[in-house]
Each structure stands twice: as C-alpha cells, then as structure tokens.
Image 1: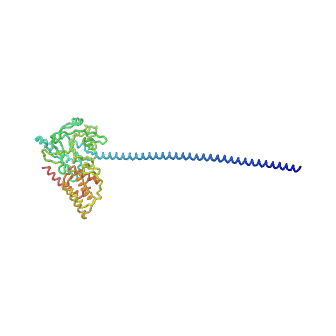
Image 2: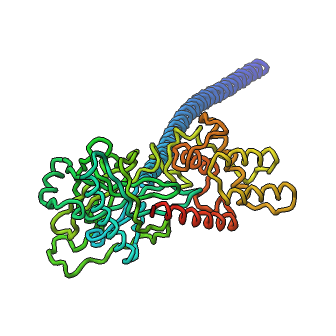
Image 3: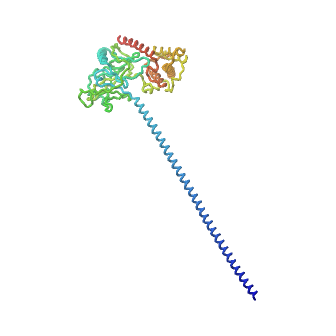
Length: 492
C-alpha cells in the first residue's frame, strides 16, 4: 500500500513537474515568440523608417538637384543678362564714340570766316578760316583808294570796249612752294559798287534772287600770288548777276552769320557793329577776338589794265544784307575757290583736298623707318624737277647727298622730306602723270597728292615739317625776289 501511494505520489509529482516544465517551456516559447514578434515589428519599423529615410533622401536629392538647376538657370540668365548689358553698354559706348567722331568730323569740316562788322562797313576786309585779317589802317585805306581808282578806270574803259575790262587793286603774297591753298574771303562795302538800298536788297534776298551789277570783284593767281581785281561784267564770261543773301543774328555766339548755299560747311560771320535791338550807334559792343593773322601779306597795287581778260572763274560772289539794327552796311563778298573738288579737310595736315583724286587711298606709313639710298635720292630729284625751281628743294637734296656720303648728320626733317617726295612721286604715277609732266602749284593734282602724302605720314602742313631752317630762309629770299618781280609786272 505504501509503495502504491509512493508510486502515485511520485507519478503526481512527475506529472506536476512535467506540467510545470511544459508551462515553463510554453512560457519560454511564448516569450521567444513575443521577442521574435517584437524583433520583427522593430525590424519592420526600421525597414519602414529606412525606406522613409531613403525616400526622403531621394526626394531631398531631387529637390536639391532641381534647386541647383534653378540656381544654375538663374545664374545663366543673370550671366546672359549681364553679358547682354555689357554688350549693350559696349554698343552704347561705341555708338557714342562714333557719334562723337561724327560730330568732331562735322565740326572739323565747318569753316568759319570771321570779320569785324564795323570795319567791314567802311573798308575792304579779308578773312581766312577762323581768322580775321586785321590790316593796318594805312593799308586798308590804300586798298580802298586803289579799289576806287580801279572802278573809275574799268567803268570808263568798259564803256569804250565791247568785252570785259579788268584791273587789279590788291594782292595776297602767298608762299610759293608749300602754300596751303586755303580759301579766303574778301568783302567791300556794297556802296562802292551800287547805290541799291538795304530795303530793296532784303526783298531780293527774301525771294532768293540776284542783283545785276555792271562791275564785279574777283581774284586770280599770278605765279604764287593772288591778285584781287575789279572787272566789268558782260553777262557771258563774267556774270553780272550776284546772289543776295541774308545775314542772321546768332544769339549764342553774338555774331551775324551767313551759310554759303553751295557749301554748307563754310559760313561767314561778322561781329555786330552795335548791340542788336539798340538803335544807338554810340556804344559799339566789344569785338570778339579771333586768332592773329600771320599769313601772306596783303598789299594795295595799281595793276595794269587788262582788256578782254581770259578768266577761269574760281571764286564765288555774294551780296550780304544785314538787319537794320546790326549797324552793318550791305557787303559785296568774294569767296575764293583755289582747288576744284577740295572738299575734305585732312585730319593731320588741316589742308583741303579731294582724296578721290589723290593717286590712291591714304596709307598708314612711318617716315622713321626710311633708309636714305641713292635710288631714293634719284627719285626725289626726278620728282622735284617737275615743279618750279626751288632753292629750298635744292638745299634739301644737297643735304640728302651729304648724308648718303656720310658727310652730313641726318635729322627727322631730312627723313620726312625724303619720304614725302618719294611717296608724292608714287601718287603722281598712280594718278597717271608721267615723270616729265609739270602741273603748277595751283593744279588740283599737286594739292591732292601733296596733302594725301602728308596724311600718309600723319604730318602737319607747317614748312618746318619738311624743310630745314636754311631751306626756309632760302625759300623766303626766293619768294622776296619773285615778289619784287611780280610787283614790277603789276606796275607795267
């Protein structure tokens, strides 16, 4: 019995132990399963988080790339805008520069011929571009006297002849070799030629008409000089009709001004004799200062009577009428035209010339690189023999020969002269002139080729550019001899 009870108890204990073990195992399995589920849930959560982070990273990258592209696009746009603005500014600056050059060229092309209104009303007046010639009172009076004498002579002689009659009354003594051919104006009071009233002249000017005059004034070259003369008009060789123009007041510059109808870059100016609007003539206004004239002497002459003269009219004539309150009497104005087609002013030389008739375009040349050779000297000699004999040229050639033989010291003047004459020869040849052709100083080809050559080498037109002091002295002495010869011819 006890054994059975012990067995039962043992079995119960074993069963209880087994049940407890089973519960422990089940609990352990449950715990393990719960841990596994927790781990799985954590792993799932981490996976979701990782995916979310990955997606967030990708989205951030996409956003960043988009932002970068936008920034790059904006930067490119800004750069393009900046470049466009830079190009626009360059274009603006270039346009402004071109406009400035255009304005400067236009201003450079403008040529004003100033005169003193009070002086012009009572005596002959000469003007060059930007320069009013102030004659000594005795010279002015003498020219007026010879003008009046010449008028009496040609009027009397003209009545007895069928053709024109001419007599000189003044002369401009211009340098012979390198005279710059600049234009000049000469005026006399119109009352010396006609009694036409200012009122009737204004009516004629209003309709852009002309006034017929039996006598006129002109100029012609004689050698290296210019003779101003009185001539009777015949309506054929010498026109009797003279255009009548208004002079208008320029308030800004305080001058009366007339722009020449056929040459809009040339204009004549006169300082008022009285303040405009003030009828009193007791207080003349201060005359505007102009550069001092240091050019060709202007003298009175008693020229010889020339019957039926052959003239190539190289001058313009105008009658200028002023407002009543100007204090300036009507004027008869002569405007010289020394060279046909000379309508461009050289940038460096300041001379008027026609670049289309100069034997080729202007080149960019440098006289400093020249080497004096015998062939070059021969070319210089060949070229200057076509021109009138010049003591100055002879001296410059002798200088070149001494330099070549190493008996003389070379100067910049020698090189400029040497290169200028050779280049001028080339232009003559390009223009079709033979080496023996000899156009005069008044010839168009001489002026155009000479001026274009100065422009080739970027030179001014001063004598000292091409000639030594010794050569210029010789030139002046030769000019004096020619002047005395001309004066003797005027008196014959």
